Amino acid sequence: MRKLVYSLLILASLSIAGCTLPQMIKKAKEQQLTVTPNPLEVHKDTVAFDMAANLPVKMLKKGTTYTVNPFYKYNEQELALTPVVLKAEDYPNAKTEQPKVSKSFSFPYQPAMKSGLVEIEGVAAKGTKSKTTPRMQVATGIITTSKLVKPVYHAAYAAHGYNNQEEIIPVVIPDFNFEQGRSELRKSELKAEKGKQLDAFIASKNVTKTVTITGTHSPEGAERINKKLSEERAQAIEKFYRAQMKKYDYKGKADSIQFILKPVVEDWSEFKNALASYEGISSEEKSAYLNILNNGGSFEDQEKQLKKLASYKKVFKDVYPGLRAAKTEILTIKDKKTDAEISVLAKQITQGTMKADTLSFEEMMYAATLTPSLDEKAAIYEAATKKGTNWNAHNNLAAVYIAQAIENPSRASELGNKAKAQLDIAAKINDAGEVHANLASTHMLLGNAYAAYNHAVKALGKRLATDDSRGVNGVKGAAEIVKAQYAQAVSSTSSATASADNLFNKGLAQILNKDYQNAVTSLNEATAKNGNLAIAYYAAAVAHARLGNADNVVSSLASAVKVDPALKAAALSDLEFSKYFANEAFRNALK
Image (cartoon, rainbow, N blue to C red):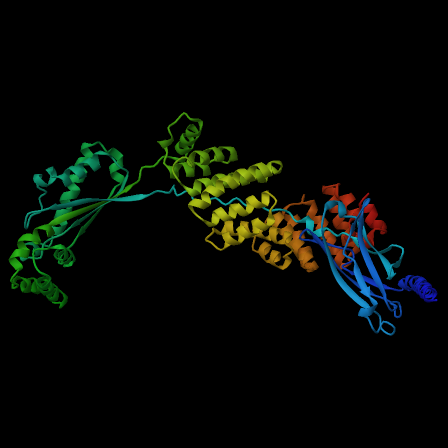
């Protein structure tokens, strides 16, 4: 009897379940499913979307569950996503209120996934029994506009350190001293080391701009009362200088030299300087002299007061003779190689036909700037890296590799790795802004936008030339689009070099930041810079599509495919234009 009761209960249970599940499946037709965004979009290499499900009232019966199984179906493949399970016990008011649930989904993007569908199937279950609904399409995918970003690179060259401008070098000849009250240049002075030095300088025929001769006198009356004594001493040096130029056959060169005579009369400056360095008297005694000079009065009265000091005779004997002098300062032009000479010698060094020390490190670095050939620049900078431990040589060699990669995109990986090897060396020597600027470009060449971004931030945090700062902002802006930081990308590209590629990325970032009208403006600026930038016309069509401007969508796509016919197929499958697929003008533009 007990077995019979159990059997009846089981049969009743199965009967209820058998009746309940078909009812749930029938009710499932009324379920409301919303996917946002729809179509799906890829950002930061990830497709993310939200799904909200509202089940009909009375659909969830006691003891049942309803599972929503989502799939992303593409080509002949499908990707099963995390199921959404609704249990009747979690919705006690299901008889009068709609059970609601929302869930976020994401999956890594692959190019093969570009065209696909989000499908769901519902599974009603009670105990071990279940029934499945037919598959239902709830969304399409995938919009890949964020993938249009153009990688941007910038080669940041460090300063070469060479002064290619005319340089003036001061040459100071030790003072020529004169006897008290006299202005004749003595033979003993000319035979002394200072006389030989001046004679040797004149004999070398250095390119000289000015010769400034300052004649001075000592303070005592015998010197002071001869107002012309200082000037005559300066003239004595000029006379000797001109005689030596004639002796060494300066010819016309002598006319280009300007002699400036500066006679100093009744001035205590030289005396104060000499007194400060004089060790023959105490500091207190020196103060007595300075007190007299600082209290003012006529030059003559001050000198009379000095004579009354106990140490005056000693100062007169030791300090005054040095004030009876003529000082000579010559401004000469530094002898330099011409740009042509530097270029030739640098090339010979790289070819091994000239010794490396023929040019200084700075001259080698400068030589690289004199050639437009990237191959020649690379050879010169490579030679410069062997002249000691210099970060800027390694940095600039890397910058050339980056520039070569810009011209040869097919060699991006090879040249990017070569640049990185040089920059790793440079960074160990000097963590400079230019090094990080080039590391940003190098990582972008190697496909790592995240590392490129990090180095761009570091570079901009250091001192950079304005052009380099703008260049790095372009790299940073491109990286920020990859990172889905669209507002930041707009800011970075707005501060970047106004190149066609940077203006395109700015427009793209504005599209992705939902600023469509400004995006059109930026993209028009990009095509004004480069009329063959087909992708900029294409992106403008996307912006117009989002604005609902059908005519502009068509005209922009017509311009795009005129430059690059391959964009026809892209536009015909791009969900950005889905509402225009049936538009005759749209299809005619893409024939």
